[in-house]
Length: 250
Image 1 (cartoon, rainbow, N blue to C red):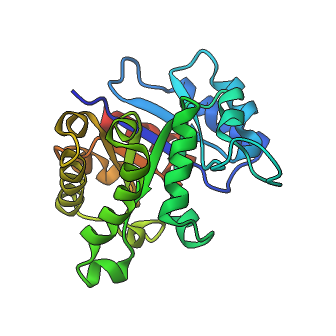
Image 2 (spheres, rainbow, N blue to C red; image 1 turned 30 degrees about the horizontal axis):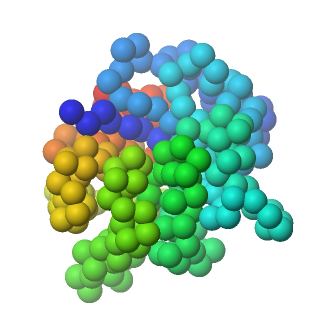
């Protein structure tokens, strides 16, 4: 039985005061005995401080990206070992904004996944297509390319020790979202793609949906057999909304 995950990606939002209020609200109203794991991913500069706030809570700390290199002359970068050192358990790799805005290639994303895995972090591999890809029926082609880069570099076993997040780019921050059936179709394809390498690992791999998930649509999305939770953007900045999504997953 795959345990659901709800991960909040704060992106470039927050301040020390806002973070403290948000974490206090989430921890205070955190649902007892939830059957889902919970992760928050604040901006890098707040990781250590938010980590201290999460101490002795069931909420795990995650980072939004990592460097593919372990150390060296890479000004401005943060390594997976550093993230581990300040208390991170998870790290996002290959988020669509990193791929599109910062031109991260499939191969670089795969190297970041490998770097995170080497430091015993849980990488959350983000994959997804743009609207033009979907309209041209290239969704599976794009997802295959993004997945295969990691499978070829790291192997199915390493991927199975991470998490996959399907985020249709056309549904991120747009208010649009894939229907539960559309999400399920792609999630099933992802699982089948992994199963071609290792069926057991495919069955155990948790696949999250990320694309304008809100309290109002979370239950329908999470009811799909291959949707194992959500990667939440804007709604993770509102405690009540985020907790409602967590409750839907759990």
